[in-house]
Image (cartoon, one colour):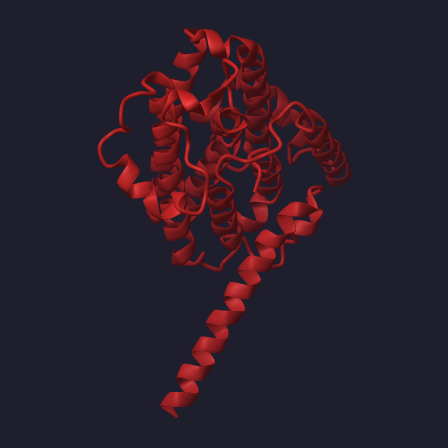
Length: 293
């Protein structure tokens, strides 16, 4: 799964916030576990990556390599030596990782807002703390990346403008989606620009007719694709973990909400994978009951 798909998934989540928050069905605990594990593993990969940028000759931080071995056996590891750079410029894998840190933050923020609202409506503390903890780790990694961009090495200079522009786009889209959620839950503490969130919230306010809000959302979906259609690395730094995180999130939504409302049909297999897992669990339950009888 490519990191840019998290932007559209975040928008889809914001658009269907009402269905999630008003649903009486509890989200499966396995979804929280999967989100936590996959997110933490991705954070460790990012930290390893940023360490390799700073000190390519030094080993990764203590414990980081061990925790990643199981995943990295099946994927190309991040470079940990100067051989990871070609002709004085970062490889596509390195650039993809930097883009991924920025792009996936949209979803991390929106998901945290939704999960905290989910807990609050049910008077529990379950999903919100997990999402908030993952987000704090994400913000730490983002801060490290921005520090690298503020004081870039010579080989990174050609990419700084692109990455800063991407950061700006991400911040604006995050505030737009937070504006969508403004009628359902407080969003101020996770906004980049609270005034901008307030401006965007007017387009999606529940006080507006449903047809107006739907039109605004249709235009938003089309704008997402145009905004991130070009200029990004074609590969993904962590496609396996990205897919696991998305699958865990989708599993929390009522199954009546179709992913087909997304323009990017490459996200549909996420729901298909979840449906397959549900079917396998159902078959296992039926077999256990038959054995008991």
